[in-house]
Length: 262
Image (cartoon, rainbow, N blue to C red; front, top):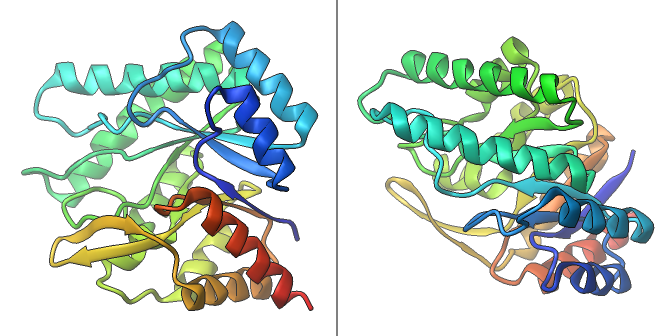
């Protein structure tokens, strides 16, 4: 069992930021392309990836927020797929295994129609990834709003039918289910995923009737409970902190983990 905990974001400039994260003892981090794919070339990505490997930091990538594989406009689906694929290309050169993204919004579609639409896009993107020999896995993320595709059952089925990875965001699930997570069901499902290590997100979360409102600092008791379940199931897992204090809360989570091992 190996539990890696690190922050969302690699700092700026990226290599110096990675060095700072290494000094703080973080074994993993997520490259955030959430607002733009700011690495403009594969050469830059390869340089950052080499530095991360030398520093012992395992990377993943978060794609831009501007993605909707269920848009009523075909051009927006095409643009969304392009953003994911460019992220995947950079991820390959970064040495980042997982390419995380929010897949889309149901809109007027039924859940089954939404599933089939996203499945089609994932299969098409996986074909491009295979053709280019990019060493990455697409990882649609569990989402926090009721209007968004991506509860754990949907993504487990997507994993079974396409072979994609899944990013389990515990804060999003808490918001989507209005504060209640069936941890046993979640971990029984995660145990069945055929990829390791599992890649996950955590943070504090504020929610309302429609689910997620905003990320907040972590709650120590919630973090402790989550880590106890991970230890109980003996899972290889990487946990990326997406709270409003990405460094401080990642340090705190590592401290709680050390306490649980005493």
